[in-house]
Length: 159
Image (cartoon, rainbow, N blue to C red; front, side, top):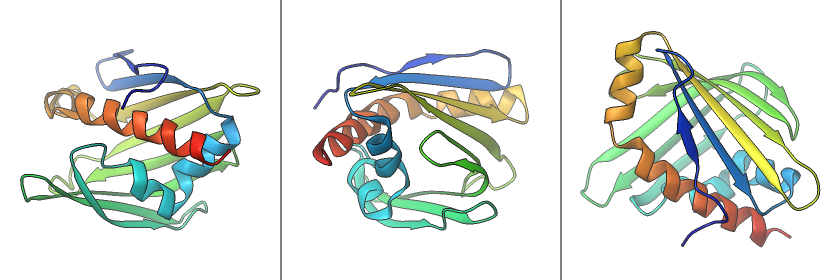
């Protein structure tokens, strides 16, 4: 399954990862797919396993948690707290990979576009260059590309 685009991953600074991707789906539907638990379950795991839990308390100060069982049998889980929400446009939240709780990041998702096209930019800000580099070496890019392909398909299915 492929979408209209492949996410571009750049490194604006020694602590940042910037992901940019265009979708063939309206902005409000991409936002809905990004924030609705039953829709997140359909895209977040990509092709890497089965999403087993999605919790979303979509309000400033509210929390989120996603977990999946990878095909290799181990659990992958992340959680965080919402710091800023602009409906349909922007989400700022913390992000913690649960096996490494002392290495949090802050993610800023911005959705832009009109009509049928939406561009997302996701800036992940780590507290150190070592943490950013560890994130990059984790193999996140392949899974992220798959997840974003699925996100596009889910958003398009909502039209």
